[in-house]
Length: 182
Image (cartoon, rainbow, N blue to C red; front, side):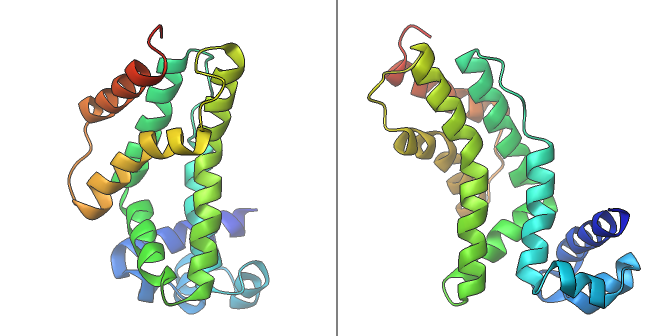
């Protein structure tokens, strides 16, 4: 377990310092002290290693739902905002988006990261529908895109800072449209 944590931490550090080309089994082994054979056994390619490195950070810090829709949406989007401002996760997302168009491995990893990342929002929205906090006919995928999409657009395409005020505006506009009584 310690070797896994050391390897993933080294992968994140190298991504920030050297970019995607700097994250190889050789460089991660040198940085972490974990043998290359062990790295290859856990991660057949650098894309899989980076996927685990970023997913580990993302899942570990995901906020627990409170059952209060506005609070839960704010907490989850703040979590996304923080990830988009962390150098390792931001760089990884940019790299996966860039490479996914030309490399099937990165395309698969990007899809897996999307599914993992969106799962928390889908669960939150489904629970809110079940409680009656959101319309029963709400399209959860569309709602998730409306909530999360602006953060990715602003940060990854606009290269602009995402403020807490921006997150609050997104949530409040969504709730005004979808849950006027929230």
